[in-house]
Picture: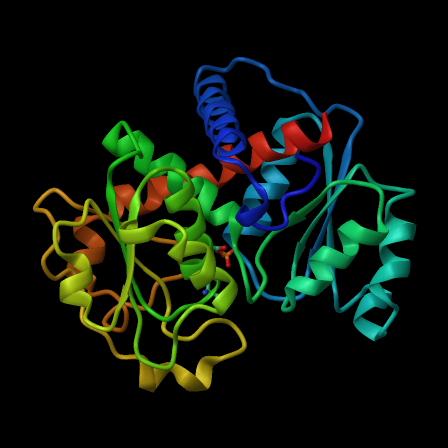
Length: 292
Ligand code: CP
Ligand code: NVA
């Protein structure tokens, strides 16, 4: 593994290696066992969109690993004034040990990897959110003690979360039911991948049907960053016919009484905030594997 651009690039073994190391780093942090694997290393963090979790967990994670994080707002960088990504990649590769980037187009992240010579980590694009899904898989495995054989249900539009969850869950042996409103399906690259898993994948419009017997129910905002005007069109039902002990996961930020009710959110807050915490551990594992 040279970069973390999207989960489509990773094998199940590589995902398992990240999850195992994440569990270990979580244990070491909780027990005061030093794990300064990245002493002397620097991570540049480029943000073209807002963030709470991604920014703070990467920055803190890098510090805990003994390295140095640099927050780079696109408002201040020359990239925000049009300097080509090819040049930015080649310049930053001469200063930094790795780059985490949150931006709009997946191509920008892919180009950083193509033109630069240091590891690139995707901190969210319109297409994918691999860091979030690694934390999600870690959390599900923590609560359910396994991944293989579980039924995963995503209710929402076919956005970056739906894309990465579909790929990550299928690769880890789960079956995936997506309930997406008509017209908001994942892109063909994801659907073509999912179809290779036969009846372990289904895409339906009815959230109740998708949630039938689910072990995990996942939802995300109706309108992703940059698409807020679409929210009204995306009203969906929630928490329908899942298993009684089904987990609820949400990448956050959540909009209560839109994609999730206050009642469901608070009933599952423990799982949801553990999921948020696990961003830290999963990303530390990614940074160690890429930058050590
Ligand atoms: N889930 C997530 O990526 O949160 P932020 O947008 O706060 O980073
Ligand atoms: N789909 C959401 C995820 C936020 C973590 C967005 O892109 O805004």
